[in-house]
Every structure is written in C-alpha cells, then in structure tokens.
Length: 74
Image 1: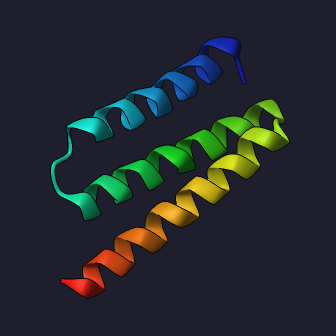
Image 2: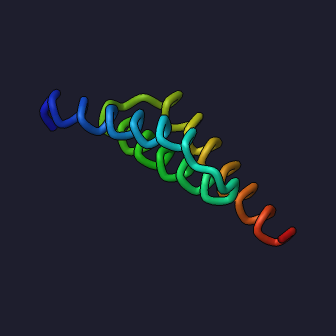
C-alpha cells in the first residue's frame, strides 16, 4: 500500500474521531468513536503497529459496550 493511501486512512480516522465531538446523542457518539477506532485498527494493521491495534480494539470495545448499555437504560 502506498504511503499516500496509508496517510489517507490515518487522516480519515482522525477526522472521524474529531467529528465525534459534534455528536449530541451519547449513544451515537459512542458508535462514531467505535467506527473511528475500527479505522485506526485498519491503519494499525497496515503499518504493523501492535500498540495502535491493541489500544483501538480496547477503545472500540468499550465504546460499543457503553453504547449498548446506555441504549438498554433508555
């Protein structure tokens, strides 16, 4: 994969995570953050970075868990 393509994946993940700060609904916020973490996982796989993959697996899992937990409370 070209360096430009890798950079685009990284910037897309950054943009998704940054955009999550504008989401008002807490459950949707968590899903957007989880989606951004999944893109970061893909980026981590592409560049071979275990810490990046591991941290974002944790973030995505926690974001989805808290989103589902909050949805059940409503």
